[in-house]
Length: 360
Figure 1: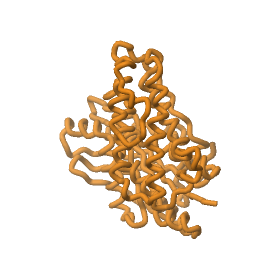
Figure 2 (figure 1 turned 180 degrees about the vertical axis):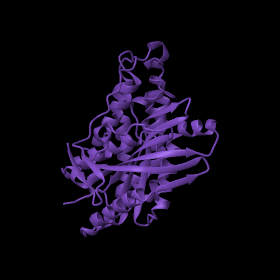
Figure 3 (figure 1 turned 90 degrees about the vertical axis):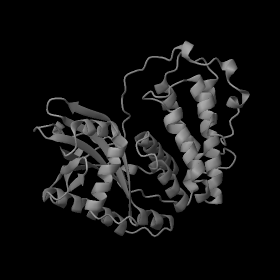
Figure 4 (figure 1 turned 60 degrees about the vertical axis):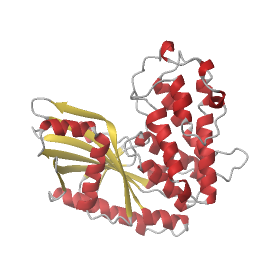
C-alpha cells in the first residue's frame, strides 16, 4: 500500500484491491425450522423469473432467514426483483430482455439450494451463494444469446441498473455494488483500481435532539447515510444534472453510554453522469476526471476552512478529516481514526466512483 497527497497536502492512502469481509460462522439452520421439501410446490423448482413472490414462497419457506442479519430472500432479492419490475418500462427493448433473463437466472441459481438438505446450510451461506450468482447472471443471462448481457447495455440501461440499486440505499448496497464492479471487470477486463477513488471522512455530531432520538436515528443507519449525503451535496452545491451519489451504511456503529458518544460508518459512491453519457458515445475526455478532482479539492478546502457542516433537526454534523483510497475497504491511516474527545464522532467512509465503461 502506498500513500500520496492531495493538492493541498491532505494525506491519502492508496489501497490495493477489494477484500471480502471476514465474518464469524453462523450456526446452521435447525431442520425443525424448515419446511420439508415435499411441501414446496412444483413451481419452486421451475422458476421463470416473472414472479417476485418466488423468494418468499420457495426460498424463504425452505430457509426461514427473515429478520436475521443474513436475510437475502426478503431483504434483498424480493425488493430488487420488485424494483426491476417497477422500472421495467424505463429500459429499452434489449434492456427489458436482459431484465427478464437476469430475474430468471437469479432464481434458477437458487434451485439447487432448495433441492438439497437444509441441515448443512446457514443463512450466511445462502446469501453468499446468491450474491456470487449475480455476476454470471448479469453478464450471461441467456447462454444461447451472448449479446444479451450487461456488457452490451447502452448508457441509459446501465444507468437504470445503478438507479435500481440506489433505490434501496442501505439494503445490502455494498455487496451489490461489489458484485456490479465484478461484473464490469468481467465485461471490460480492466482493473477498476485505475478508475475509482474512495474518500473517507471523519464527522463529529453535536446533537440537538434528545439522546433517545439520537440512538433511534443511529438504528436507522440507512436513513442517516442518506441524510448526511444530501447535506454534503447541498453544502457543496453539487449539480444534480451532473453528479449522482449513492450513500449506504457499513456494518458497525457504537454507542457510549456515559458520554453519549456515537459512531457509525457509512459510504457514499458519487459519479459523474455526463462522463457516463460521453463514454457511451465514445466522447471520452480528461474533463470528466478533472471535474471529479475539482469536487475533491473543494471538499478538502471546505474541511480545512471548517465550512463543511450539515445542520439537521437531530444535530449538526461536522466533517473534520478526509483521506482517499481506490477501493471499498479503505482502512484508517496508521489507525489514527480514534476518538480523542468527548464529542460524538461518526466515521464516514466516502466512496468516490468514476466508472470508465470502455465498450470496444
